[in-house]
Amino acid sequence: MGLGLAGDLGWRGIECLLAEKGDGAVFQPKMDFVGVRTMESCRRWGIVGQVEEAGYNRDYPQDCAWVTGLNGYELGRERFPSPREEAPPVQSPQKRERCPQDFFDPVLARFARSFPHVTLRYDTELVGLEERADGVSAKVVDQRTGSRETIEAAYVVGCDGGASTVRQQLDIGMSGSPVLTYTTNVVFRREGLERLHDKAPGYRFIFIGPEGTWATLVAINGGDRWRFSLVGDETRRTYSEDEIRKAIVRAVGRDFDFDILSVMPWVRRQLVADRYGTQRVFIAGDAAHLTSPTGGFGMNTGIQDSVDLGWKLEACLRAWGGTQLLASYETERRPVGIRNVTEATGNLKRMLAPRARHPAAEIFQPGPEADRARLAFGRDYTQMMRREWYTLGIHLGYSYEGSPIIVPDGTSALPDEVSTYAQTSRPGARAPHLWLSEGKSTLDLYGRGFVLLRLGAKPPAADRILEAARRRGVPLSVADIDHEEAAGVYERRLVLVRPDGHSAWRGDSQPQDALGLIDTVRGAGAK
Image (cartoon, rainbow, N blue to C red):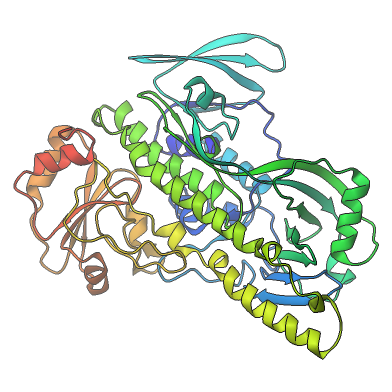
């Protein structure tokens, strides 16, 4: 999240410094799924090609399968194309990508470093904060030399993980479930693992035994690196290397040689911070919300935290943002955090459902009766798990209901769906994607400032809105779109889109009080 925010601020021309306690190396990739909305941000930043070429085997099938063992019985499978073959959904110019953290972080770091006004300082630990009305003093320690330093900043954002120092400094609690499972991740190397079993290749295998769901295996790079997870339960325990090796051999179903690269015990949680910050200090990413990885929502939610903060920090630093603008960060993003961690926990419960009602013993036995039992079990489990595999609504369908910088138009909110997503220009929602010409999406219009879309062959006047923006110093450009499909999808003849690509206001003619509109969307409206 910190690299994403540093890159976004750099892209916006804002000077910033990222202080990272570690050296930046990633030994245990915590994520490997870059969602479609995050890829839309990467498109804006111009780094889509770098994500695609980061190192994941783009020809590797992305199937998810549930098995008794890789040399046991396959109970069901959801088939997905390889990253190279998968096409974007009709609602976006981008598609999801497979790019594990140890590939994705370097892409973001190179992007952030490409701006001379962005400084990345590794081995630098934050140890204290002092917030004042006019700024923040951050006390840091160089981990290599032990030297101490105080850095003065206008704002501080804690993207410092689940044990966030910034969150603790602000005395912000977290609500939810502190322990869902104690899980142990094991990254191991074995080239040609697919040749050791008879199952079709897949990105993720879920292992189901007589005790229920007990482990998963993920193709981290689509090649020789694998992440094996002993899912665990609410009981904390430590596994010896011998136990880990025996568990991996059990999952594969035969003895074989492999190299264990790293072992990481961790706690699966469902927690959201009670507050997202103060006037000048904020938290984002895992510091603000901790989620089960089931669904791949964690990093992607955090990147959108950064995108929401990025343009608002720019606005305040350039003096056109109002006094309520940064306060809207919590109003907008905290409900999304609650929504997403709740959905992820639901996915976990569905994955672990065989524990509650142990599978019938015959599914582990040979014979026609067992075949029928496996078919019935697999059919039910496959249907249940589809909610986790198809989540376009989660990634694109969130809307900033009740935000003080959104001007509602009186229309009813669309249903918050998980698997499906209907585009709308309703205020608060992500502005719809349409292809305007070869390779150019409506989304390519958004990012630098506000954009006022005027739709139709004879678009309405916008002079009052433009003058109001000029008076307040708000960056605003006009895009005239004479496009029949766009007119239908955008639903109104005038749509005001924020720098983060969310609709802020819409109408068929400009309002009489255009200055009031501009003040509202820049965070200077009436309290």
